[in-house]
Length: 255
Image (cartoon, rainbow, N blue to C red; front, side, top):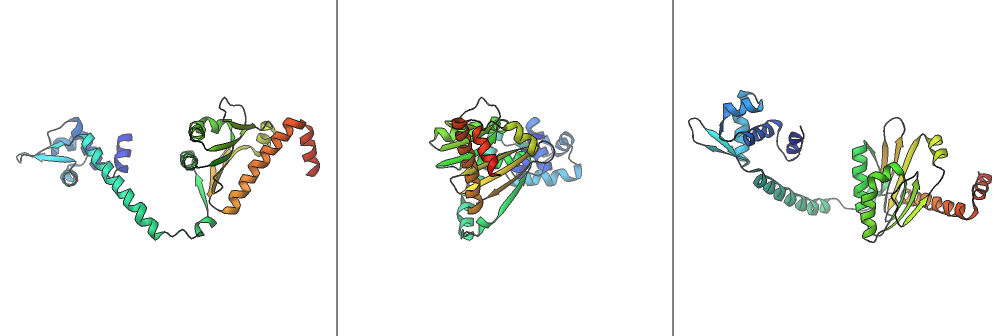
């Protein structure tokens, strides 16, 4: 259940989340009634209810029998939000003091797997852009990321986009590659590369079959190499626009 998942993210145990949800459905209930409604073992219910009282999520009324009522969700969520924001602000300051950015982090490459994790990191990376984004992307992934890219372009970030495949989405500086079929046949995958502010980059391999994998790094050499790779594609596209297929004939002679 999504409710349980999100309440767990806010620090509730499964039993605490179930008890609170049960009380929202039927307030002014006894411990026995809450256990029956929520499926929590009777031997555990009062331990759970005491913890919820300590967290000021529910309130006990009377004594024979003791009944419980929930605090309104809006009130609870406002309090949790304030607590979490305070903790985040505190940690941002204190952890930064401990973690001295002396450049050693730039030697590492982080491996990321799973589409949800990869797209979350991609959106974070795009959102962090202040001046420029170089991105090589297929139409399938552009359909997912176009809103994030368009928002940054509206903010004044320069975006240089090499597009593989057909898409109705276009940015001001879009360069259509035009050799998608050959590349897809050769790689059996779609590759996405993005460089932000010449400071960080990601490369993702979306395989036709198998696990999607990605690499993220601040390594200066890797960042500039990836940026040069995208710029090279842009120059190649512009040469083809000017010279036609003769441009590819020239490159083939060099390989």
